[in-house]
Length: 412
View (tube, rainbow, N blue to C red):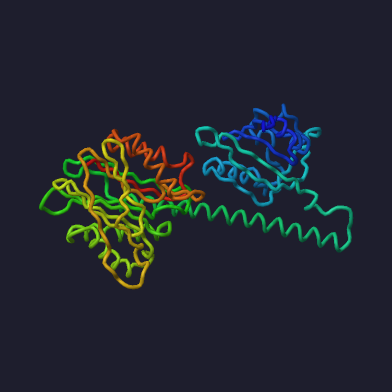
């Protein structure tokens, strides 16, 4: 069956309700017929002009804040790539036929981002519902009319107050995000050479004000004998400053334990016992691997974490999933954790990561693992630094992930 040919320009022009398209610089790109009719402006008076040049704020209303609020909402949609629904707005419009005369109007706006092929916001869809007639008390002087006007004024006031509270919350969340990111950077070890071995580490915070700071990575030189290191990644449940603090405690504890025990399972055992006394550490996932270059082996253990990936020089990818146990604190009794050992060939690459790299809410985890395996096979010849960048480019959404991502790439 042949799909019908749709004239989307005609569809846009005929959309019911007021809809306009603006660039990220808030310049009109188009407006449908209802927007032109109800705003009293022709398409020629709109397209190519800055929104607040077309609709300036009423200079006779010292309390007017519509321009500030609408601008902030649109810029949030551009910055976050997410729809922004505004509280009820009063925004008076100058009569186009009577300059200097302003008409009282009430609007219910929604600003939705439209992404371009590169995943960045290309346009803002500005949909506005004209609700002036619902707010304005008309045609009477009786007590019911006065009560209606009082009620509508109260609703308008409360809507404005709610929007101001939401704006203060956004600002507070933004400040918390900045502090949490700074703490995360301070707690994670700086990238450094591990003896003569080539490594790369990456941390990418989630988009949004609160979704940050639960993931960590670590690389530890192990005591002799032999050329050995421990490499680990982990993911604390929760976000924000609290998760960052828990992350720092658990990373340090696992790093210390790895230096004094025989294998990665014993290190996770010690971490699990410690986590019982750290508030917020329950259900943390982690994977720990001891790499032995003299024996060409990787010994690993996982506490509910996505499996590390081992790609050989020919491009074959193996997920290390033979020693997986529940997350920290997930069972009441303490049992020894399992560990497994796998051999590697010189030139292979080991990749540890957190779930932000592979998981998507609308798909099975196997899809993400397959995507990772495909990317590793294609870029297997790349050195760790460019390989880490390629994995992030291939696997993370262009608009950013809703979860943190930690990544370690180690050439064997």
